[in-house]
Length: 115
Length: 146
Image (cartoon, rainbow over all chains, first blue to last red; front, side, top):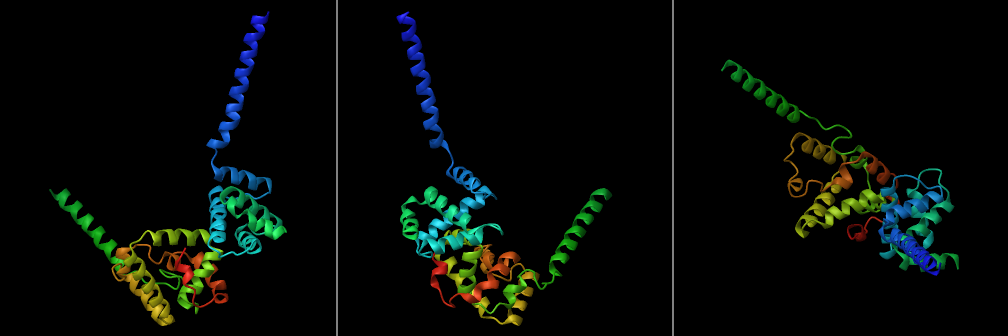
């Protein structure tokens, strides 16, 4: 009986390890552009995945080189690139997702805007 | 034998027609250079700054291409587009005609085929850029430093 339990215990542990491995492995292999696109979908922002990824990366570039000096300017840039009828809120959600995905070092820009 | 000669004649005739077609191509109000670019009073810097904001992906691609050229080609492309913008409407229209009727007219294109893509190749981009370019500073060297 103990032997059986021991075996099934190891099997269970094995399954847990495998499951954990899969859970850990999937984000590692994920494409950031896909993750970014998926996050945008939760805000009701659709459109071409590649286009949105470009805009996300260019948004970061503009923050890095100082063309957009604060989050307001950055959100305005994003808003102009979104389809007609998009909301200001969606522009800010896009901006937050872009910074998280492509330039987390720029997060203080967002904190300054909310502070 | 006759068949072969006939075939050769057909091929030659086709080539002649094709060549004649190119040679007689006229510039139009929007071809090869969009009308908005012929008419705009904005400077190169104003137009580029506008496109950087309203057509950022197009601008990004052009600048990537630009940066991948040797420095002398970059310099020549910059000089050439400033020269073009220094022309008045009639001069630009003539240039458009010259490039439409003679593919070798623009020497810059032999060094970099897409040297003026940001300006000449896309009517939509030209329209969006020229819609707002007057709101930007006339001189802004940062547009070439991307």
